Length: 202
Image (cartoon, rainbow, N blue to C red; front, side, top):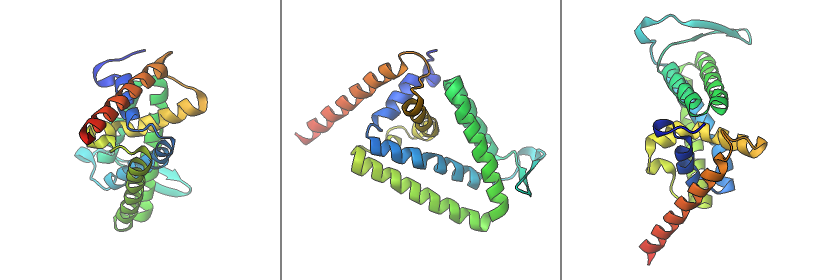
């Protein structure tokens, strides 16, 4: 079912897809986007609990660790709900992955402690961001989407690499005709960008 405004999946995916049409660049993003999200949540897991809310204690692999209702949880919740509103099926899978990242990062926070965790976060973020900029500069030959719409690129990237993977592996689309419509919009956007680039060079 088509949505509009903030939850206009066609519009968002066409915007993101116009910056990610090269297969190598797409693969690079599939590999690096979710680690960026997960390590960001890891860093946020060291923020204090909101209003001293009670912690949920889990035990995994014989290790007891807390799930804290802090900024890590809040970001996970926002991303999860937004993805579900965009598309119930793929969004629910994306939300599940977000929650897994939150739980996994909570476990890592407990195991590593802040003094080591921030170093892990820094290394992963540097490697993944460098890989993505290489993907754009060397293969896509177009600046990243975040330079044109920072919030949209950060918020939508994890969902769209998942949706791209589902499309390529299973042929999934949110509703009939979605990919055909989006492909047309992406091609039109790329053509417009190429024309602007040519005009600047001429």
